[in-house]
Length: 184
Image 1 (spheres, rainbow, N blue to C red):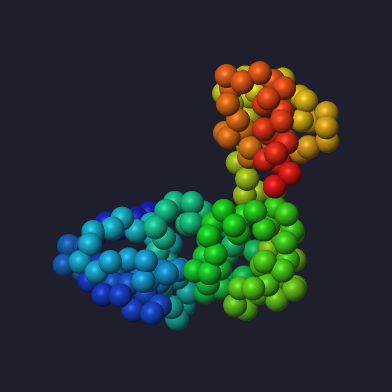
Image 2 (spheres, rainbow, N blue to C red):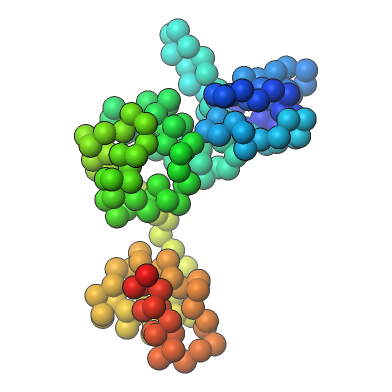
């Protein structure tokens, strides 16, 4: 199993790129081939998809894309071709947000994703894509977090706005700033 391949892009095609490494050209199916530049060096994160009649390499620019792809292919009824299409037409944070908010309409805009598959994606992945951020940030914002939770906001929503709040400000100003961001 490969984790990544580092090499030079020698060919760009509508569905794949060719990455040359040690005089071997690897044909790699990627989400958006035209986001790469020919004759440039790249580090492509790889997933090897092996079936009895097929051996395909799927490539990703970031580890986050690869992790999301791996979660997608574990969803019932969603194979690697649909998973790569999801990544081609949307950004990773937008897709994660749609799943967390149960936004079926957003997911249905992707090719081969209908109502049933969109619901299955949400059922299988909701709550599994957001990393828990209860680290150092919590100490700096303890009063703010408590106040927002008392107002009925979810911890996951609060954690999303904390990086945009200034720790130097008084708690009252922090609450106002956080509320503005949460209401957007």
